[in-house]
Length: 281
Image (tube, rainbow, N blue to C red):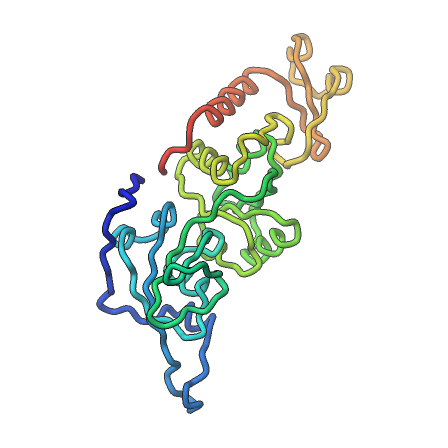
């Protein structure tokens, strides 16, 4: 997506009907001002402005707008931003009326909230868990040597629990999954094609310096170790053992790999991913 000039004017958009999102209402209830049972909770009205790639997650008509919204007086920035469709895993720097703020801070009445995208994580290669819709991306990350689990049949709660337990970043195209409170790190993957998704993740997490191709099993995520011909000869297809190859074996599922024609195609995919900058999805 082509960014507008930093000096571009922001328009103000107040939808004709902008009731408080049910998710804000349920996530952050305020006590009635007079304590009367059944009375409508007091409301706060604030303006929200999204910066950088966070605009990709908004409807097109909202991307350059200053969005005015009602929310419960106990609602936090996190609650309000997620109600607008942006998971908390995407939130970086927050400013309220120009002052630094935290996503856990409450939203005062009448303020303007600026939300910036999250920057690069701490140095080092994170571990990932990928939902079932991104299986091809999981294989490509393994190809580059990254620890990447594929949650084929797991519920959102199970994925969130796994991510919290193993300190894994969640990659998904399911925004509701990324809003789970147990998930601290993650990304809503914008790209539609596997090559674009891979380059996007490499750039978003600063992974290019940590690439170690052909060190993990594409099927089970296990580590590969060098193997001799004598170790693997009995399991090779006819004709392979008679040619000079380098062999590796997975310590997890015992799958065998060698540098044949398929390996050369994968090596080309690695070179492509590392050579090209991340395009706009």
